[in-house]
Length: 335
Image (tube, rainbow, N blue to C red):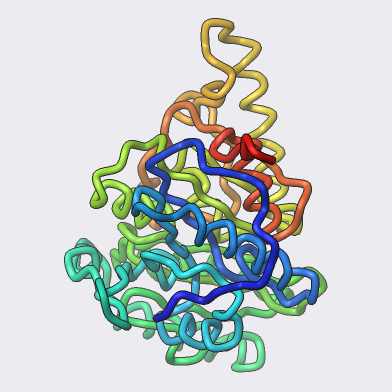
């Protein structure tokens, strides 16, 4: 994977917090399908290429896409995108690092192995999904393509009218079989006819994968900044002490972020001895996450001192704005 050079004007900004691990969703965050978003991606890429070396600034894409699906978007938009150092794929079920000095990706086999066992059985899950499909019909429950799913992730779309019943039946059937799992419920595109459900091992998820990658790189929690636009990003937003929500975020994520910001402000007022950047304490007061659910016990708590910012700019422009709002990036002295 080569470095792409952009003709976009480099923003007059500099990174002031190092080391930095920036972890971003891809679709509608780093790239988008609106024409204006391409210029935002190119501008961010030009900025990042200038500041990522030495490698105390790293970029990771944390996406629902599989590695094969990442290659697909890279072929389409890679000339605009900054080259990542790491990939978290399949809603936190696979982690890859860029092969040093060569093309390609190296899978983190230890992370993949950690998802096996512990009550997870994909054969049982597929059996349950087949039962649900027989009940509601293939037009109401549609499995996603094979290259999107794996032995640690099964994703399907379910029609609005039967979604609640299907979800309740799924949970009951998996509980009866003793499955340990988590699911992510995404309302899908606004105005669409289907919801999307991901079912994963309990140890997986965007948030757990983000924490694992940060720790494996030996970085302090303050080095991690995560960015997202959709409901399945809430898990990783809660896993970081610094989180950015771009302005084009979906309704579920906006609702969660508004609640989190309200809690953050309440904590700042209630604890005058707490610094403003550490006002939100998810250990003591955490807004409910409407999309992340464990089949048995909840996942780990989010870090103390979480700060969330809501950008007023969309997609990649919102990433750069959010980094400024967090104080990770500042105007260049020569600007």
